Amino acid sequence: MSVNDEATGQQPAAPYDSAFLKACRREPVPHTPVWFMRQAGRSLPEYRKVREGTAMLESCMRPDLVTEITLQPVRRHGVDAAIYFSDIVVPLKAIGVDLDIKPGVGPVVERPIRSRADLARLRDLTPDDVAYVTEAIGMLTGELGATPLIGFAGAPFTLASYLVEGGPSRNHEHTKALMYGDPELWADLLDRLAEITAAFLKVQIEAGASAVQLFDSWVGALAPADYRRSVLPASRKVFDAVASYGVPRIHFGVGTGELLGILGEAGADVVGVDWRVPLDEAARRVGPGKALQGNLDPAVLFAPREAVEAKTDEVLAAAAGLDGHVFNLGHGVLPTTDPDALTRLVEYVHTRTAV
Image (cartoon, rainbow, N blue to C red; front, top):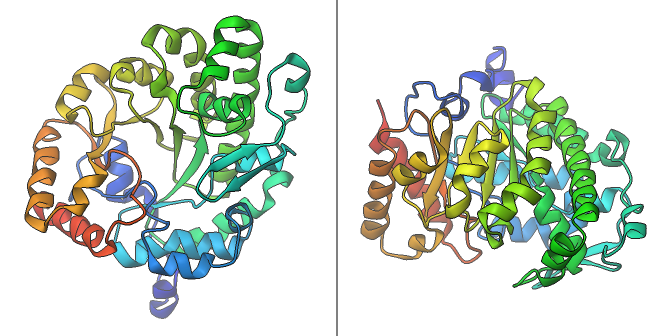
């Protein structure tokens, strides 16, 4: 039970009837639900305090820290969903890939994958590899009560890019060279990563996550034909692997305006849209039968309150005809964002859309 449930002696409320999950299922909602990518992170002073002196990957492997960090934005902002605090490279680290997250750089892989022999280093992920995830989600669902918890994983293409490049890349030259030059090895690499990613999401769902989001941060670097041929099968495999659980599946990528129609084919129930494409146009590209998530430009939050509200109204107006809409930013919360601006934004969306 959550703290409030213990105080009243009532059974804890279930997330199933939450505004967030209803919107994901394209059902009527009492208000448009709101959560933010990277809502648990550097924009919060309480996050910086609790993370002080603790490396990123270590933070992701400590259930006490994961629980506290995941809960912080729910307490502060009143968002409609929590997102499990993790990093996309956690499952790779868990299976023994020699990598680290370097401050100011990002994930750095000691030995990049460039050959078929390298592929053998990617073994299966088992629940025992990430027992801390199961423990943390158990703690979180007890605290969250009726607030849904979103599970989290990196998509095969983005994971492959880090593994092949050896770290973040502006042009993805090694990644594309492998994809074009050895398509068979590329397909096997993405298929292996799809299996690892699906296993990681299954652990989270079985532990109590109410929805899952697949982040494909770098896939906007691809042309549609390359995405369809070289990436779509692996992303579809991930979504198919968790379909039987019946939890909403969200798919998000950055710079994916030209890919939205194909992203919709991968199998997600909700397609995330960055700030470059209005939601009504995104709905046309994605096609029927999908809820949409997004898509306020994160930089708007640095503008005066009246400007933030005006841009928010534009997003809500573009979403007015959608079957299902989850309000979010078009990418993650920027580190220097004023937390109060996020709190005000949640309240504003709830008030403007209340039925």
